[in-house]
Image (cartoon, rainbow, N blue to C red):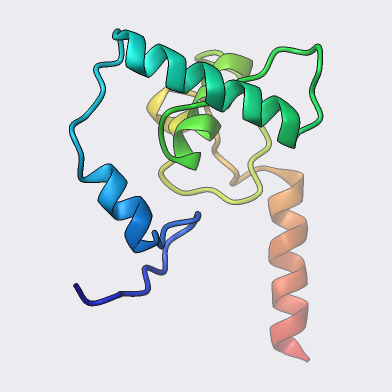
Length: 119
């Protein structure tokens, strides 16, 4: 199999060993095999992040899923937020207002861009 460089955010290029492991049968997320594997992953994450006592969260998904869960856990529908880089975001999907048109930061960013292009 040809190795392709995947240029999207996140650690995306997988070694052949990892791809082979992923080619095996999937573990049911309610089975004992998944539970023991996930428990080991949480334990290893605690070690890596030197977290002995605080809750340790491990998401079984992309980095985006962690960001999405953070956003929808911290803000509610109708909340106003400061978003410095706006595009189709989980916040928009949750109905959170991220309109930056009247935002002071956005005005400063636009002024800086205009000054840079004028010079």
